[in-house]
Length: 127
Image 1: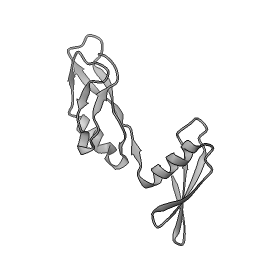
Image 2: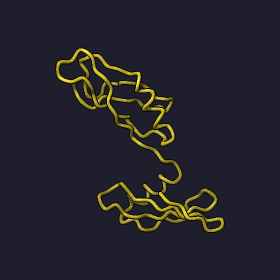
Image 3: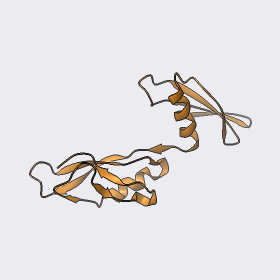
Image 4: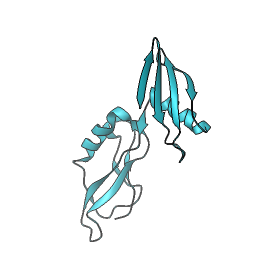
């Protein structure tokens, strides 16, 4: 994401990730408010750009250790929803001390309300 300041207005250019096109989208901000979005090839790009510059969020994916399994020593996990971008590293740190005991099933809650975000971390495969 790049920013160019013009007086009170600020242009932010980013690459949209909502579809395979990868449009270069420019968002104009004035006083912290989005005044225009340009360069998006679809409505999803407009919505993505507005959210990315005002309230960026991410789904966090990683792995945690599993004990008692003959199949795998790790299980993939992800946040069940978006968490604030500023909390991504906190979420990963919180998961660094977590381990699961087999059996683990898709959708099992690995860590509830991670970092006070209201979002659970869940398993994404059976082990």
